[in-house]
Amino acid sequence: MGKLVYGDSGTEIEFDDRVLTHLQIVIGAKLRRRESFFFSWKDDPAVGDGRSSIWLDSFVPLYFRYSASKVPVINREWITVMTSSANSGAGLTFIEEPGEKSTPLPKSQA
Image (cartoon, rainbow, N blue to C red; front, top):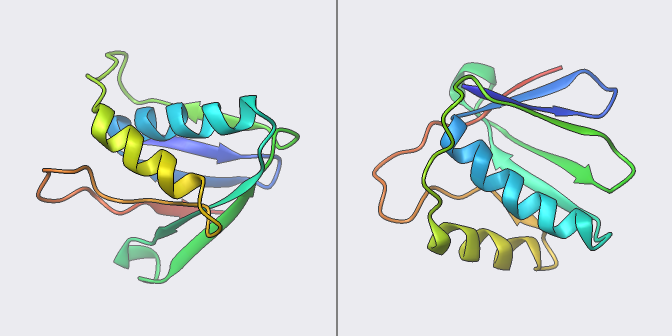
C-alpha cells in the first residue's frame, strides 16, 4: 500500500500503488494548471466506514509514497473517467478501476 501525504497536517491516506499512480496523474494534471478542487473517497470500514474529502491546491504540498518500485501499466479509461470527475463541480471522487472487481478502500490516518 502506498500513501498520499497531505500537506503539513500529518494526514496520510493509504491507497494501493496502482490506484495511487492513477491518482497522481489526474491530480498532477489539475494542479499543473493551478486548478484547485476537492478529492473525496469512501473510507475503509476499519476507519469508520464514512467518507472523507480534502481540498487540493497547488500551494498544499503533496507527497506520493509508493510501497513498490515498479510503475504499473496505466489504464487510460480510468484516467479519463477520473479526470471528468475532477473537472466536475463536486471535484475528484475516487472510483474503482473500470473492469475491476474490487479495489481496496483508502485508509486515512491523521
